[in-house]
Image (cartoon, rainbow, N blue to C red; front, top):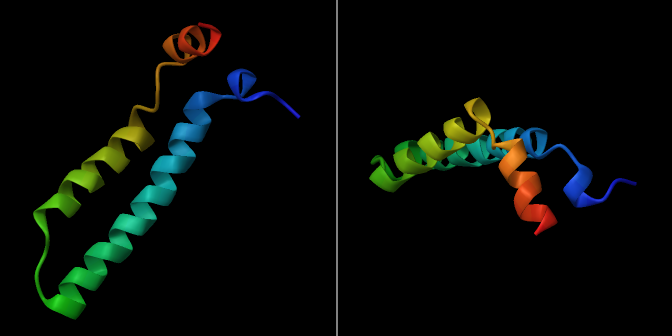
Length: 68
């Protein structure tokens, strides 16, 4: 088993982003169909999810911080 510092942080960020996006989409669905309104803070969370999915994390910086 690999230690966390040796694992691929970009992969973990994308997986986290995908799971987070699923949670946000379910929340938005609930807001629209259960309460009939959309919360603006949900949009900010969607953009964070998309950022994690598209950009990921900077692996070099991640490893530098893990080594320190």
